[in-house]
Length: 232
Image 1 (cartoon, one colour):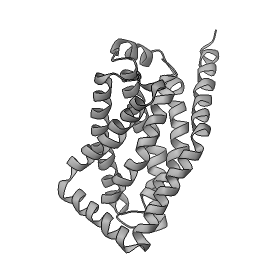
Image 2: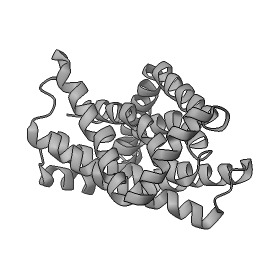
Image 3: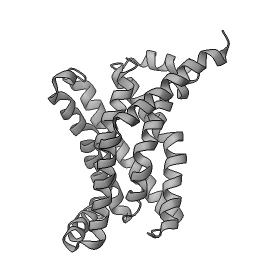
Image 4: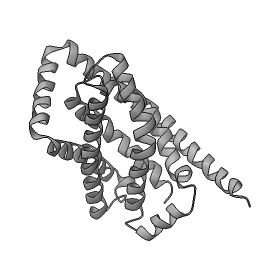
């Protein structure tokens, strides 16, 4: 059988998994995006909300990367694990060691994403005009996500889902066409969920972008866990 013939079923399966995940979560995703948009509008039009977010912004600036680690570990790791443990169907999904690994991984991702947002501010400036927001969002969705964020996240979840069977994960990486087989489905679902969200996120000042991102993140990590679990 040719290599093309071998890749094609995996490509179709990965693509279909991503579309299935996106369709199954379109309503919760829209609800999250609507909530994020409402929060941004309230920041600009509702003084009490602006004051509250101003305190969060000041705290983020004062604490620095420690706040990035703490909040992203909670929203990306701890809360999704608690939600999975609270449901009988998914209670046995992760043991304590896997849960700890997820929390640590998302703590690291907090630094990574924070650095990315700061880098976007350095490159394109702190402006909140539509041109700046669009440039940052396009770089986020079509450079950072497909070429770095998605591969790193999928490898991390594959490692945790396999209960840290590094030999199996390494063998899978060497098997060829890994991105098509493992990453494409997550990329498709990620694009559907995050493309509207990042435009909303970049409409806030840089120090508030990560907190808003974390609100969407909790839902997204459950979707990634679902897509990677289908392969085990």
